[in-house]
Length: 528
Image 1 (cartoon, rainbow, N blue to C red):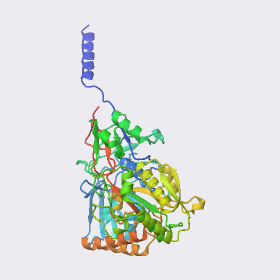
Image 2: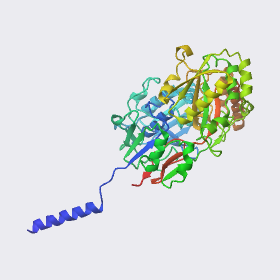
Image 3: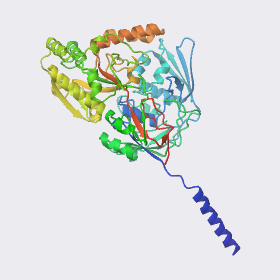
Image 4: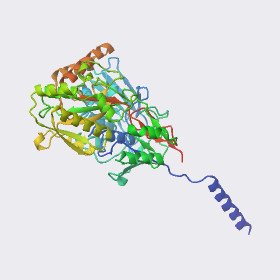
């Protein structure tokens, strides 16, 4: 009887302990991004949603912190010789891939080579590389054949294409062929078996990931995951998404429509994040197809510079005065390499002047096909306005609307308009990419097949080579101004206005890293 009583007492005590310390309740965080992830290979595409996906499941050798400093991430250390012609990189000990195999120097060199074959900055570094050498399992070196002062900037490049690390067997995939398997080095695991295109992607904490032993800071530091499950939810209808944020059905929305901000500002359950600089701001832009008539003629392209009124385009997306600005710099305003060279070309828009220039350009009424990503409001709305302005100026315009995934594929077609080609690609670009000539889509891929639009100017190529060799800040800015002047004169891209995006998240989300322009889902916690 004593034994039975003791067992009963023990059972009661155990039950009481469980009641005092309840089992962990799984925490799910739901986020709505500015578009859907269609391709999961960040080397095969420059799509920003693919980049955001990449930061969840892969890590980088070097990362940028909130102050713009380049810091070791997967690396324990990096160093260079006195003449900056030789670099040594050493991995942190104990790093493993999500399948449990160790991360090696050989994996990293293969990853860098695949990235460099696609990325503009990577190509510049590769052209000046003599060799990569494996020293041991954790150490590798780079030997340059000519000076390139941006090695660390390149390997720590924060935006598309991001030089993420992959196992060698995946990194040896042909660069233009997208990988379909994810073996990650980052803080989250991608549950491909739960991926429902058009609905959601599911991620879980990577139990094999070892964060750095330091606070998270921007894209750098200790990437600690404090949630059990992350869902990227597809909600093309923005009103539905905003309603879901208000009710708590979702926890985060990237790039809220400006016209919803007054409503959300009065909601104590929603936090608005509008911290951004020129680097983390966005630029409305349009990329003419330089291969196909009529934009193969610079005289016709220059009409667009006079026609696209930045104030009109910013007003169309609803950007408040403190969130939007007219910017003449292809390298972003309020940014390190901002330039005002030939600013007068874009500062005095005029429909009448555009009509006159079009009449004098030799335009023969050729059809203009505008690719419209209708599922992204900050692309769709400017595309509609651009098409309307072009029609009023006298262009023969046809708008082809589809989702961004379709546009992203179609933009690579070099076919004539009569065979399904295109003429103009309205876009939104981030300052991370535009603020440096070696990553700027308007000049970094000049005279290459690296980015749709295929602009080519031999003077720009020569100026880029001089900029890369320059070390003095004043000398660099001199080349920046000259590169900007060539880009404006040849109309490699047409600017439509700079704006600061606003993200929104629930007030019960704590320690969310903001101001990067890239959604970050590590470090945060969610109160139940």
